[in-house]
Image (tube, rainbow, N blue to C red; front, side):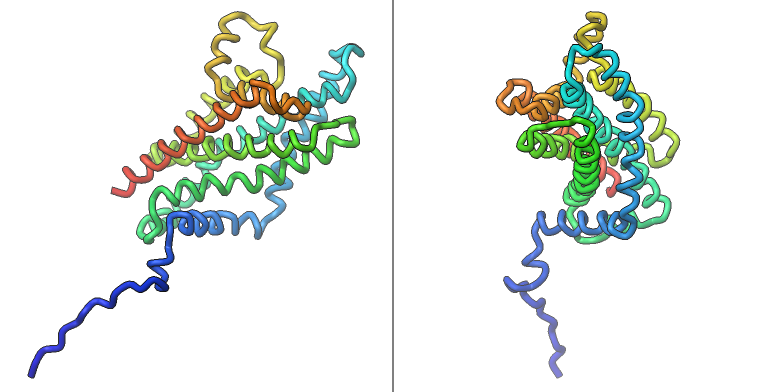
Length: 272
């Protein structure tokens, strides 16, 4: 009696494994990350509280400090883009805390044993931040229209693309930080807060840096957030061909490349 031999079934072109690509892995991770947002859409609305508070309390001070020298619409064209960048910074830099919750529950480790590529996992998680970011940005712009905001429509659309690129990079860095300090969860917030406010102040978000000391102006030139803020203001004003717009995209793209590289490296090292 001859022993039966088992021959592996060849993977056909129509099998699920053959159809899987890196982009499909990214899409699967993105959909998984967006499901909690779809189940609780009020989380996106709740994220508007902080930017609207800044607009309601800080905006009138800026209008009053203009002393009638600038129309209200010009003041909003300066300040609303700042608030959108600030929302991006605050929202994406805290996303690592969600990964810490997954580590505590064990769902993160279950993701690591799936056939999904490690890089697609970090990219999909980072892209997830773009959806609520754009939704919140659109709501902020719509809320400010009755108060005199008159942005360039094309500039607003391009500005959201710029914020999305920046958000991917910041989100990936936040995830990398969460993985690096997984044994000391408190360290995540210590590092995040240490970098958050200097980046915000040295970007000219709330106050112009032209009146500041020389060392602050030099330091701000090395801050990628500063170039994004200047680019957003130019885009909202309709100056789409300004050199600062190109520099803003360079700064955002560099942040995204560095963030994704650091994030992928962190998740690869953690899964060994």
